[in-house]
Image (cartoon, rainbow, N blue to C red; front, side, top):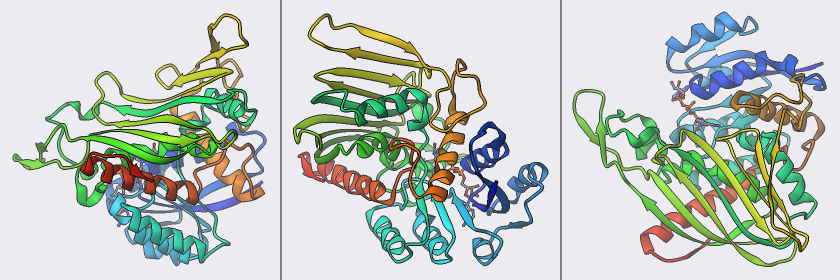
Length: 380
Ligand SMILES: NC(=O)c1ccc[n+]([C@@H]2O[C@H](COP(=O)([O-])OP(=O)(O)OC[C@H]3O[C@@H](n4cnc5c(N)ncnc54)[C@H](O)[C@@H]3O)[C@@H](O)[C@H]2O)c1
């Protein structure tokens, strides 16, 4: 088994998810490469203990990411820090020659993402991908195979979205994710948008134009010090795009929703594809349900398939057992390491987001902001 020695920069919510996935590698019996976490870096020293208690291979604990990049034992970095730090830290990681899994939105805005893309182009030996785990649900893998097989026929319409409701509570205090200077002008699109775009972009469904409606629903929040502070980030975004199906060249409507205030939704990612020969829908609200309609001229019947653990990368979990969030995180990490080792994903829809796909998302979100301000459709 080949080992890739990793550092984590940003040991918060997502840093811990990666560490936990690395500790669960025995779940993946066919992997010939595995991550080992040897260094951690965070400004918040309170986070260190959980890592050092659970991961004996960690030899470096620091609040200075430059020390991690200078460490010759570190071969790859997972970087999960607030968005205003992406450009600087991602570029320095790439320049240090270490492979990078970066979190979305991969730059706080398009200018930051352009700078990261330039850095990637100047370092072709460094493997760089962006995190996005939802396509690794078995039901989404199945939809991906249908797309590859042209099973949908001509695409009629695609709806994809990611809905949260944690911000419905106006008393939830402000944190960096609700502040434009740290989270970015994209707001909810920067937080949730790449997750929504991953499958459509991998399918080649690239928006030509976008008409966006953005909502700032909660305009101020408790500042955590007894007062109130403005909350200027966009809470919800609905993007109506005209996308082109590369198979037949036809244009179709594609709706991409990212909402942080969607009553009743905790962390719901969904995808619906309607075609002339078949239709499919999946939502993480019911992570083992795949709904399919196959149309051959007869009755139009939606069928329900109980998906089990038919993952892209083989798992020891029994095939009848349902998948969940931490399983798809593990699959995403397996896909990153598989592609690092083999130079290509195991399956087309089992690859992490590429730098080109990220760049397309930045063009889309930038055009969406313009569309909202101008109240008109904008070229992507
Ligand atoms: N893939 C997903 O489902 C998912 C979910 C949530 C967040 N994210 C993304 O992950 C990234 C981090 O989000 P999070 O929820 O983990 O945030 P978080 O606030 O929980 O963690 C970020 C960490 O970065 C640390 N940090 C800040 N400045 C630093 C610096 N200069 N050097 C080292 N560490 C520093 C903070 O102390 C904090 O612990 C963001 O890009 C976010 O969009 C992805």
